[in-house]
Length: 411
Image (spheres, one colour):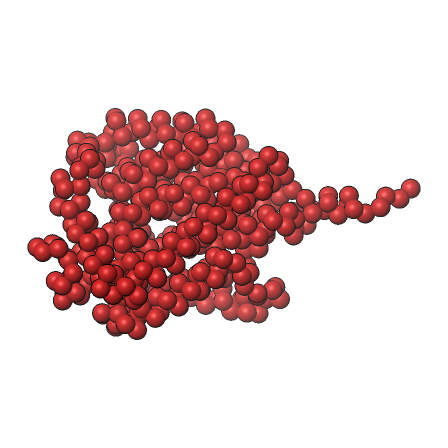
């Protein structure tokens, strides 16, 4: 969420995230809970990807800059492993989803209101100095959390909370329009279709899509329409053409350095750009999670990255198959479905955005691994009277009932 970026004075630059991370890690260290990492295909691939990007950093074209970037990425994955260790029950997963949804939907709802009140005349941006500062990056993040908001809506007992989430879902979609991001529009369209396919009780989704569509038609100015029309042909704009040039640069770097690529942020090297970019091209970031990973970490890095996406999708698919038609496991079925939609948004929007190291995507990978583990057990390790802390979603006492069924009766 980066709320400190919305403050004033010293609070803007104070290392709040570092402080919170230190407190969290120290608390985990002194906690009596198990600190074992639940090894799975996702966790193994995360370690392999971290180690491989560390190796490519040793051979990076810009080693000093690459080292800084790798350290930042390592910090992201450290907290991902904290998630794998700590979030080990349905209740904790539910609360984590709430925290993620609130943190990012704040910008979506605010952006949606801003867009409608201003007639779409100004662009919506994220908090400065964050992963989502750029309008394109914010648009992708908002597309990714819309399915999580839908999951929370499906499993909240409070009618007021469900209505609020429905309104928030529509406003977040409008916020995506307000970013003026063409990649965001693609992601929004894909998410809308995927939600209709994978979501139960589709009326809310239809209403949200209707609100977003009506806003695009009634509120958005001709400048927005003209910008979105360029999606028909990337070469209509300098932005689209330079994206293609950056993809060609990344592919050429990988062909000539197939194992290690050019290292983090290799596109900033003028000699490397001159050697491998198309003649006369404009030097810029590689706007694709796939091509950027390929150019910076070679074919091995790309295979590891694609492996993470595939394994995450497979985890969710297995959960859906295992829990389909089981009323007591409907929460797991819906969460797996919505995680898949989130990754559809990441993969679709990310094809045009330079965000392969986006922290939210790796947190959701970890969540898919935890979900696969918890749903496989079929037992929620919580007290029978336990309820989710937010949204009023009930945690069924499956384990308690199963134990009771096995115990002999008396009298």
